[in-house]
Image (cartoon, rainbow, N blue to C red; front, side):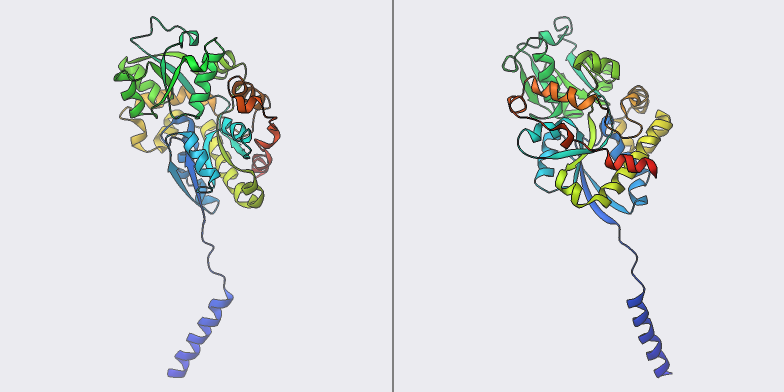
Length: 335
């Protein structure tokens, strides 16, 4: 009996060395420049739908209020990817650092320049930005880029207006209500919350392709998954898995109603008003790209916008081919 038990134990030990252990999910950390913003909805939605796990990925999503801080974490190697605006790829290349969009979520900013209702009668266009204090998520953030461009393109120098970092959501709302800012650039659901309470009015709407072309002169690819170029080249299999998950998520957004999508999101994202969140999403779905591909006309528009006020971009020969890749979304389409 004793010898039999020993033989079984020894056999099990040998068998254990022959049978491979189950593959552990590959761990990744992605930083999101404002998790609750509807423009970055694909990140949380992919997690909620189980599309990361489906690809064998264990993805941790970290929230960061400002995109400029998220890009700093990426360059420092703290995170493997960022869900943020494509324009950071051009901004960083002008500083000698290379990151690229590997999945493009949207072809419009999805942002709105709001103005305090107290000033709505006086401020009719960006030409009236002179002397105003305007809220942005952070200095060097995409909201700051867009605000500066709107002013400069309407004859207002960047030195003639003040950008104040106030974040988004509750902090942005408090800044408007307390008079710390005269207006500012923000996104849904913050836009609807301020409109519904009557504290602000829409001055410039960059949510639809038509309005984006009107104000920026073309499509402006914005929300994306961007990563360091060198990391992408060294981890192609992993990047492909991420692309597979995000392209599937974008397809879900394209083929499901705002009500169905809203039902998948955490309740605290609604900020207490599910109906407004759903209505804003129904209108904002047009911003998302169904296949994750970069629109051909987009990068030149972004370069033009940044080059209008950013001296580093003006004086640097930007290679747009190194700011995005369609390799992984193209492969995801085949699957």
